[in-house]
Length: 477
Image (tube, rainbow, N blue to C red; front, side):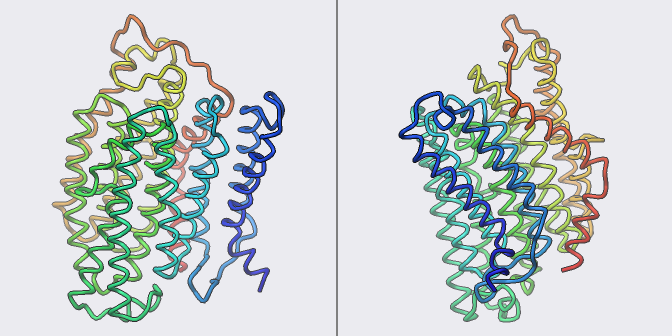
């Protein structure tokens, strides 16, 4: 029995062990001298990054299948794969944050907070009970507000944290309100029992709407998106990157599971809701992204538009729809973190983050320019990058319902998105600037993070085995 516990909760226990190691290093640092192995930020970051590498590699070995705590916690091959995707994203974010954190006073606190949120996401993904899901949701959300306000001297960071706290509290309240209605009308919180216990009454339908609204806040679907741009702009860039891909990816994993297991009796109802959300999210995200000049705000609205495309895939209500969502999240991690990696590196050294600042960037930083270009090409869905195949599979999954109006709207929005992505490309490669951003010198970890993103964008698009592997995992459940 104890062996099953360690085996099934291996990912959570590894993260918890890393958190305690970082806490132990924090305690030792009080008595250390500056420049020692423990007192030096560069050495500390190397130790933490190596621990995260071990955590990521360890996710592929010795995994179990089964449940714990009376069926509240579940683990299978698909869940392990989803956790490994998030571990990979966390590793890339950590690599890219190196230049920013090496001169920061609170490195230990940063990793304790961010790994605590990741632990909450793991509990959410493995939850087979709505109460376990809610506990994981809160653990993954509350530390994020502190991370958003991690640049304590910046007023915008404090404002962003306040908006994050208010919106998170409101969305969590909606989810908890919906859960209470479900429990009151069915008498159970287990995913496996809820679908058969639902009888379709209005109170249950209302509870589903409340829970979907909570999901909408977490993934920044319109009209629940109003916090996104301000929080993205005010947060430190590595935190923005984490919010944009890992936090949303975890919620999307759980959302597809809840819709396909718990709310099966309400498929026609939530299809109509997701349809409306998809259209509103794509159109609003793209139209507002066109107007932005700050790169972080532009990518904020870009991420909103990308959520719209993911919702198109979810409307397919099939195995292919589930596969396309997970596949796109993996691609989105590489693509978005590639762009944010360049922005984070430039911002940490120069403090510049507007499109005009990047004019003539190619003359001084050709390699970083190509990293940014390839990432933006993938986000725009230009072949042969992985982003093209990701959006293709999402649209094909949505087309399974023969709703060609939705597919047409999505295709038109892809054309609109080309404009603001290409505007950055134009500034980097074609526009002249008398005082371009100087040559950026980066460390090995920052370079490694960007290389991983580039390899991911190329290989996940060209190599079809990733998609087939995800399909096999879901089909075997």
